[in-house]
Length: 228
Image (tube, rainbow, N blue to C red; front, side, top):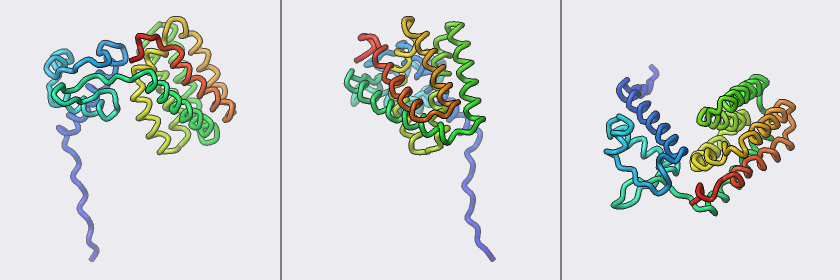
């Protein structure tokens, strides 16, 4: 007679609901940080935030832990949680690394992506262009990020995807601030046209180099007040 290991119990619906709520709160906080409604160095008082978001403090604490793991929030002794601040040198270093990661991801995606994955990325680009026409800044940025993460996912490299996600979250505010300035928004749209065209043509080396320069342009578009 064969012995079978007991299967672990699935989380009950209450636990799953609490986890989903904390994830939703975390995303709302990311948006507040990206749009400077919560500024770098600002103290995050639990009671004030809970009232502002109309949530209880327990899932809020879990959301803050998630953001601390992402590097968007720092927990300081005797001060509690504050919005993380990055210096100009730190931002530049991280963008340099992100550019290399996206270059490798883009080149690899040209070999590994299915036609269906490329079609989905093209569809995201059309949606992003529509958001640009509406001047819908937040949805434009959300779709912009979805295009980049979809290209990385299409490379089918789990380690690459993990490192990209973590670094991209640390730069979330700065990529938002640098993505849609009035002077450069049209240029960004044109650059994404090129990205989609090179991916569709599976021109790996060209796409890789273009993505590296595209990410670096985030630094050039940041205003001095956006940098710590």
